[in-house]
Length: 258
Ligand SMILES: [Zn+2]
Ligand SMILES: [Zn+2]
Image 1 (cartoon, rainbow, N blue to C red):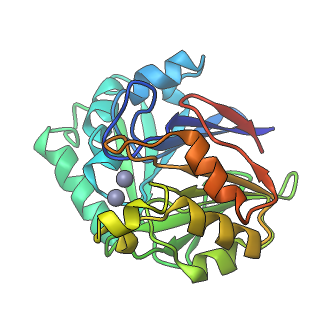
Image 2: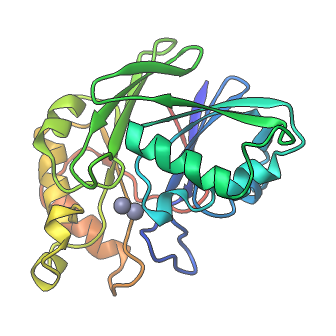
């Protein structure tokens, strides 16, 4: 059985209810962490899981809300004899390596070892035995990646966009998938107000239209901006203008089955 937890569902600005977006994949005895903002160790324990079961970390991109907790997570495992593979684009790997080095977290005395694995757009890899993953470039930052997982055991498929504006090639890739977790930072009215947004993030109206065209079975929007004043009803209403599949508005620490 595979399950996925939302360690956070918010954008760069956390709110009382939503921390920065990060995911935790649980497959067999193993965990995969997708991005690493703050309090990851505590959140994994709150879910009744063991942070020492994290075998892989997949980094979408290195904006602070997605990566600032990496040194703290590795530090919290410094006494554990672990090998954790970190998958990311080459440029992000360089950044993560430097970040850990600043804290001396790649020194010999640190028993938890991070093994860096650079992946490019289209590359396939196995973060865990029995889980296949493919990386895709998305145009949010030069080195931003989306990740698509497939689970040969039950034939299910899942794609997580990371931070991204609407990117039609990604929806082509996601066509017919069981689950799409996608950037849905704001309702559409903010795209006029903040001209930088359309090149960085996706609004709820566009997401619903694209997900419907791609025949996504279950759509989970996330990365909601905490600094703007809107509620989840507005997000859901805009998505529902076009999208007729299964819509799940996530909460922090929510679990879904795959
Ligand atoms: Zn972000
Ligand atoms: Zn970002």
